[in-house]
Image (cartoon, rainbow, N blue to C red; front, side):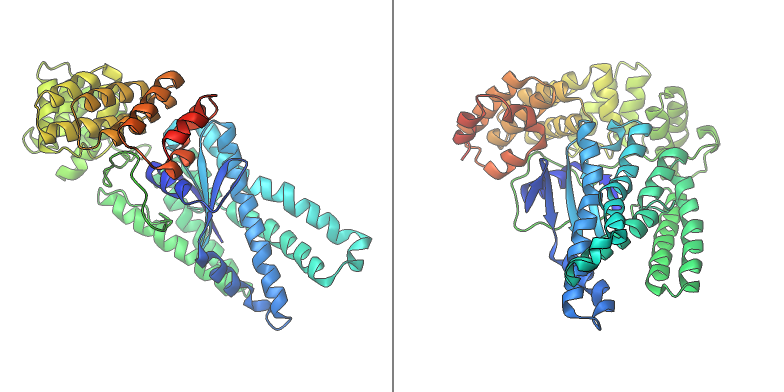
Length: 460
């Protein structure tokens, strides 16, 4: 079974809105294919009885849920919301950006699943199997105890192997970087496959080769200057929910350079690769290197947001004008959060948003709204709220949606009073999406406020 934990703010919202149940405040969704795949794995016990296959499926559900709860509860301790999805290949715990956690915390989160499964299920079940009283129990119960002991020992061990996207692979990526983790994963997966085939474990062998192949695909994409996640697990949700805030599907993180890689000045003559390296340099605070790369590519040939970002970090007087032009031409915003981070840190985000709004046209308002969204995703909540208020005053296409987004940002900034005010404005403008409001992680503080029941009644 595949276990993975990653981040995705849009998916966090979508799955929260369509969760089947909650445990300790963590939304859980179970995809039907989970039971199909689990049942197929259990067919090896069909000659014993169909009821044993069913017990295998129940044990699989319990084991994977407890494993993922280990991740989810640890994230909760660290103040990060998460949701759990049980899908065809196991489970996934979806949380917010890894950048919000230190390396130590990320490692702890990765290890928490297997540790929880071993402590809460394997050890107790192992003791039960060794007890004298187990033989007096119904056969169904004995099988359940046996399966729980078996699954939580071997699946936990497998998850600690240094193979992405297993938990051990996530730890390897945190400690050595993603490029090195991919190479280690390929080698470890091939060795694992050889062991599995040599021990009559064909499924495990083919699965290990599958993981090796996907890591190899990512490695090839990386060498071509692209960032690909071959292990992305899409959790389908029924129907559609109103979007919390505008999103750009191409918004991606800029991959970190491999340790020991050549300096940007020695980059190959691939314009896309050069620009990626310029983004990396900006993210790492090396404005001079980023400027050299942009000059090498040619200012007119680079991404306009990259050109504006270099101008901002270099103190150029035309930086605001360049950002305004970039957003006017591309209202969906930059391809990553580096530009947004620079605007927020420099205190220029609100000024750029006001310039966009002052254009008095739809692209300008859309661009300002995009900047608000990216600021929120970049954890610059107070600035996102201030920009959102300016967008709201400019009469956007959906004042209700904008007011709700402002409320979310103020809540994340721990300004409950402001959040309550803006939720009220969202209600006044006709915002009616109670399932989204109840599941929205951003509003956790507001839901504990005494005024919440009355406010919630206005959103029905």
